[in-house]
Each structure stands twice: as structure tokens, then as C-alpha cells.
Amino acid sequence: MTETLIRGRLLSFRRAPAHAADTQSFLYEDDGALLVANGIIQATGTYADIKAKAQADTIEIDHRPHLILPGLIDCHVHFPQMQVIASYAANLLEWLNTYTFPEECRFVETAHAERIATHFFDEFLRQGTTTAVAYCSVHKASADAFFAESLKRGTLMIGGKVMMDRNAPQGLLDTPQLGYDETRAVIKEWHGKGRNHVAITPRFAITSTPEQMAMTQTLAEEFPDLHIQTHLSENKEEIDFTCALYPDATDYTDIYARYRLLRKKALFGHAIHLSEREADAMADSGAVAVHCPTSNLFLGSGLFPLKAMKRRDKPVTVAVATDIGGGSSYSMFKTMDEAYKIQQLLGERLNPLESFYHMTLGNAVALDLSERIGTLEPGTDADIVVLNAAATPAMRLRMETISSLAEELFLLQTLGDDRAVVETYVAGKASKPKAEALRTEA
Ligand code: GUN
Ligand code: ZN
Image (cartoon, rainbow, N blue to C red):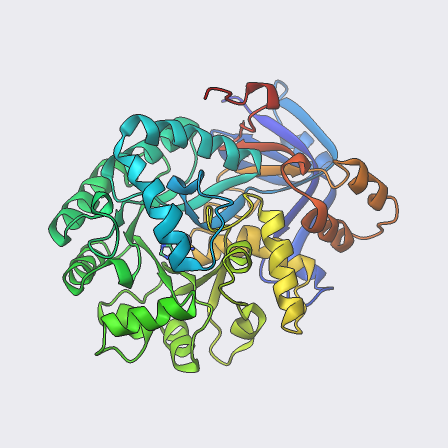
């Protein structure tokens, strides 16, 4: 068994920080180390203790003075939208119809899906993101390309073939039966293969007929342990259109509830404009609201009340995500920087410990995967990111005046991007694509 010892400043959350100075909520080792073998963290502690445990031939990698955290997690992205980012639209529905749906039509071509999959994994690993929850396109081949690339990279990824049977171009429509059959086929071929997880993925109520929603319910009942992902309450026009399509439902959330899609491990992208009743229904069911700040600002969708959701008598579980390509950055630092600004506009404070908790353990808990990822606990998967808060001249200058871990994290969040990611380990293997190795083909 080849062992690797990875040395640096360890930071791993134990639970959600209660306040900005909650030092009990995380483990921090100034001269720490991880012992990694077979893709698993075998031991975590001070360098001295770990060195004493290591075998004589253990490979040692010294990342001092950099921070070592669990790999970052992104709970909502669209794999076929890498070439949609930076599309100029007035709002969500115009953006979908003008740019996004036509772009997703291209994924009928397997070669295109495979090419974008290589770029997708390069980019996410470059940003320090080791797990993403992805929508593929309606085409089964897009899910095949996504999961095949994930298998190759050894990543823990969650993905789903999108089901959609109306209100989109013909090239993007399946049928209730085809959506069901192909989703089952994707589950059979990919779920549990390597570290892949398949999510049941009805795009949103606008693009699914009641017949397709009923098929989705059947899938959800047949596979009660799978994740479910969809969109909810992102934009006022979208909400009005959706409710008009399902006139019997009390509200947008009730549509999904009627098809038994509100449950643990069900991820609802955006969920910005929920009523108290809807937030209660989310909280009671254990469903997750996935906050996508750069997307919400870029598309002008609204200001997600993150702190208010967490403060409720019945708190709603919140995850965070880029929402590529409605989102405008692949970076989880930029994502939390924009989340911070949204809370500022709402008169709330989002402290840096909370932000880094959300990017790591918080998202792992929301996915019900904290036994495997989002932490540096021994026995978990060795998905690890190494961060340098002095990666650029501007960051280096600001670092001169920084005197606490929280300040350093806040700097990483505010000025950091992929340049601050020194290395990304996937199951113990150094996997950040090097600049010179980046694909340059047209
Ligand atoms: N709602 C339905 N589909 C999408 C999508 O692709 N992006 C966003 N932001 N919202 C959606
Ligand atoms: Zn989305």
C-alpha cells in the first residue's frame, strides 16, 4: 500500500459555525498532516503525530504554508452550459429560450458531449471543486459522456439526464415514457460505478407535463435513496407561468409536493421567492434549497434570504452552488463572495467561517454525503484542496496585514479564484490540470 503524507495547515469543519468566532466548529492544525492511502484519509493530525504513524517509504508532500481543506462542493451546475456563460439576456426565460435551449440541442452529438465533458472536469478541478451536482442535457449520451469522464478522473460526481417534454425546442424534448426509460438506463449503467451517483432530474415544472411529473414520482418511489434535482421559484415570471400550468396546486412548491418530490436529498435550485408556507414545506420534508448567488444576480432573479432561511423556527437546509452557465463564475470563492454581498444588501452578515463551511461540510451534509466528502476526517475520501491566500500580487499585499484565520478566509473568498488553488487531490491523486496541459484544440 503506497502511502502519501500531505503536510500543511489543516482546516476542516465539524459542524456549522454558530458565529464568527466559533473556533469549536472546526479543526485547525497549524502544522498538520494527512496520511492518505487507497484514496482514503487514513489519519489526520499534527505533522509530528502523523509522521510517527507513517511507514518508512511514505511519500511526503509539503504544502506549507498553504491551507489544506476538503475538496470544494458545488451543488447545482449545468454541464451543457459551459458555452452559455456570459449570454446577454433580460431575465431567466429569455435567457433559456434565446441561448440555453439552442446550446443544449448540440448535445445530441456524442462527440460534442464528450469534448465538453473533458473541459468540464478540467475546469472544476482547476477551481478546487471535487464534487458537483450536474444537470446533463435531455440526451442520454450527454449523461454517458459526463459519467464516463468522471469515472476516468475518479471523482465523486452526481448527475442526471434531464427530463423535459414541453415548452422547449423539439430537439430537447423526450416523452414521459422515454424520460423514465432513459433515466432508468442511466441509473443502471452509472449509479455506483466508480464514485458516480445518479440524480433523478426533471428540469422544472414548466418543461414537464403532469404525465412526466407522474413518471418522475414513479422513479422517485422506485429509487428512494437517489438524489432528486430540479428548479423552484427563481423568477417572478417563471413562478406565474408555472402556477398557471398547474392551477390545482397551492403554489410552486406544492406542485413538486403533489408528486412526492419533496424529501431528503431533493435539491431545489434557487428557491428565492418562497412564501412562509413553502419554506415550512421545504423544512418539514428535509428538502434542500440550493443558493446560486452569481446566477441570481446575473439573471436579475432576486436576493435569496440565506440567513433568514437558516434562522427560521423550521430552518430550511441550504446548499450553495455556481449554477454554471446562468452563474458567472466557476469559482466557489466568487460564489460565496456574491452570496456575502447579497446578504449585505439584505442587511445580514455572512461570516467567512460560514462561507467555507457551506463550500465544504455544509454542502456535503445537504447531499447526505458527509460520511464520504466535505471533511478531513479519517475514513473519508481523500478529496482535498490546497489553497494559497497570497496567490496574486494583490492578495500577497493584503496578506501582509492579515492576522487571523477568519481574515485569511475572507481574503480568499473576496480576491481568490483558481490561481489560489495550489493543488486539487481526487481520491488522494494530485489532479489540478496544469496550465500548460490545458486543452487548446478548437
Ligand atoms: N430553470 C430551468 N432550467 C434552468 C437553467 O438551465 N438555468 C437556470 N438558472 N434556471 C433554470
Ligand atoms: Zn439550474
